[in-house]
Length: 77
Image 1 (spheres, rainbow, N blue to C red):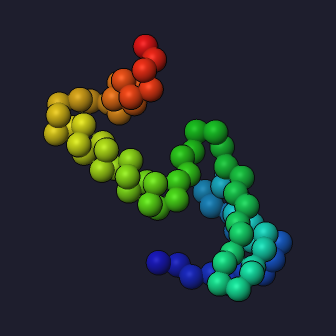
Image 2: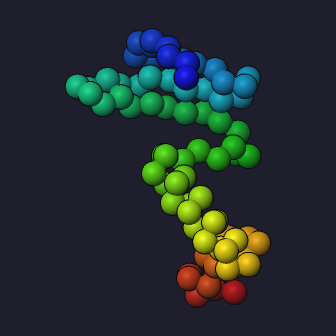
């Protein structure tokens, strides 16, 4: 794991197209601003873990994509 120290309004660039800026520090919380291309997926870890668990569950059911399951839940075709 890489550890970096940044101050408010300082930025980190990742892979030439992802920009992470420290917006605010308040107590133990940090507000980050992210600029990234539309093709990139960005999730909080707990959301990403739920998505991964859902994918594994669908694979176990023999469904190759998460989209049909989500569509069925929303009631749309």
